[in-house]
Image (cartoon, rainbow, N blue to C red):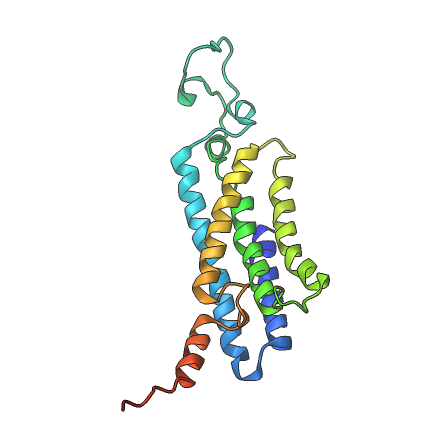
Length: 211
């Protein structure tokens, strides 16, 4: 379900919006660049999240229930899980060390915040004539990402810091990938990929003849 919300939903929205509002001459290219940026954002975030989970090795809040420590383990002495855990479910135990960062948080923001940035550029929300409706549309994906991330704390399997670290990772890669491919949403031609803007500037450039 996570990849459905973080990847497939943004892909469908990008495809539909590109068909409806993109200039005919650039529909295919804009769609291609947009989909490429989204996929790279999500998959790069996924790899970094998995690496950091294994690197930090932080306990989940329900780690003791996974470990099932043997009776008589002292509470004020540092012990190793391999010495005190009695559970036979080793995969579940090992997963108890992979709480930070939260994958649902990082991946949902990598995909849905990228979609928010993309919509803000395509709908030109910073123009004076842009109404509140456009702002609301661009904010919805980010709100969805936040709800997905916060929902993972309800079952006591993640700390709030896990949500925050995952959020930062997702925002970082979504913003970086978007600004690599598109201008800032505050710029006038925010709806066109950077490469198209450069090509149009070069096509309209007329050098001054030397006297």
